[in-house]
Image (cartoon, helix red, strand yellow):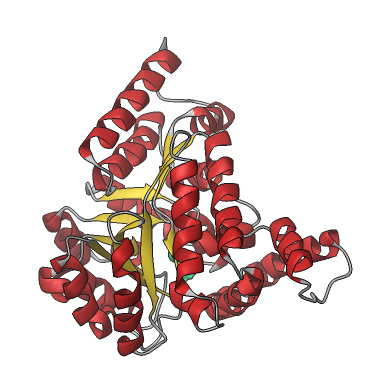
Length: 358
Ligand code: ADE
Ligand code: ZN
């Protein structure tokens, strides 16, 4: 295939191509507009007098995070957990997921594996069933437009026993709603090893296992190393972020040896003010690691979706058209969809590439 020569040509290609998003937090897709509507529905007071003032506060948060990337994750998380206070009943979770899935369909995103943080809701008094049933209904209603399997994430800054309890509550929805489990939230002092028991239990139940290893975390290399080969009985099935592996030939070799995929989110690295992320991703791609691009928390990251994050990666890593296609092929390879779904995704991608070339 001829390489794209102009940036705008490659951007148009990325926008139009069929895509997957394997790294997106469903609660991180809660737009200020939907938050406003749900607050109105439940008569929850917000410290803003209009929806547009609420929207402006998101722009302000984004500017603040970009101005000081040093503490970006904890600052972001406090807004993220605050924002979800308006999610109270089954219909709210249904609305959250259908809004996101509709946006995916409009952006040519064909298959997604969003995380959900059940503990962030149950600890506020929301019944787990409201979360699980609302997401399941949305997944089913939107199935003809976008393929979707959720990933149950445990809050790593809560005790391991809380993850065990959350898993027990959600387990009846395994394989219907979610196909894997992961860990997210504040990584400092909360290594993957803390959740070894629940990873092993989920795997024994036939689920996939993954862990966030966010950019530039304290003991970040050790966390990646645990995820690659130590926890869950020989290592996890995927790593969320893990971009710092790109600075370590040993980690690259270990990840490649296990054929693990990394779900990277460029906008998060821009916010973290990490200038080397492009060179790390370039190294990962050149060494044959299966990297893919996700959108993480688009509502809090300037509304940047999968395509916009792929454009960022293409620019920072000087990816050509073939390499952009490879990122999507990697996603199809490492996603946890059924074989027939993967085959259809592959065929649609092949057809798109052929037509674009022709
Ligand atoms: N939870 C939601 N978004 C997250 C992120 N980007 N990192 C860690 N935990 C999260
Ligand atoms: Zn994430």
